Image: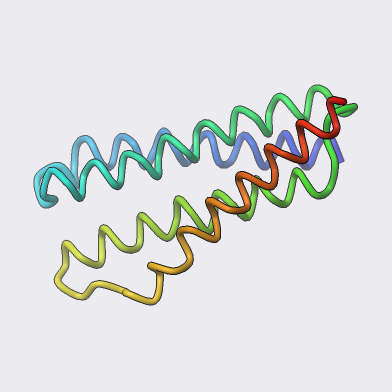
Length: 121
């Protein structure tokens, strides 16, 4: 499981750098300031949780399947729904169905953190 966690962390970490650069250099020209801040929030949360996954991969005594999936799905639901909302909105075709998915990702992050806390005790 450790290898899977590290691979997932590396993929999400690399993607957050790519998306961050994309936002700073390409999207900056087409997004409003509020949209760009939302996009950056998605990138930050993705990187924060990629780093946590990396920590878990190298410290398997804290890793559980629940924590892994909460952070992994949290990134997909939270960050990727923000990316979709921002980019689709900038193109004039906002994918509103993604709106309710974002808080689900946030809830998964909270469950993951609480599970990590419980595992630490």
